Image 1 (tube, rainbow, N blue to C red):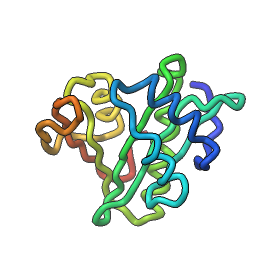
Image 2: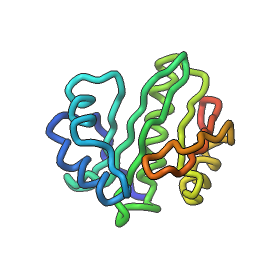
Image 3: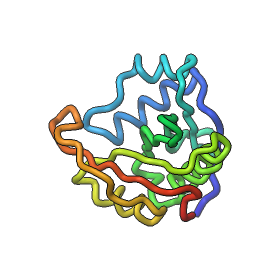
Length: 150
């Protein structure tokens, strides 16, 4: 595993985040949504960088006393280097500071790689949301008790 530099995202990171979105998702998050969040939204954006290249990022929010992993994306050429694990470790600490006892997320039902990654951290199946994604694919809601298994 390479150790990434982790930092909070700022509005100047928007271009890098959009490049990651386009490289990782068939339907990327809207640029205006990310820009509004970075300008003062209620969620926390963390980025992982190597030599000034933003390799991945994640978004964490809160909902009813639980931490909500809203997005996680790592550039394909930086996958399997521990980037997502480092972001999740930081989010686990942050969620603890928020006094959250659990974390949940939605993941594409077809994304076996992500589901395996989250299972290794302690996430388990909670429910299925029919047609959650813009292309009609279902999402699986996964939930984990904190602290995560790192």
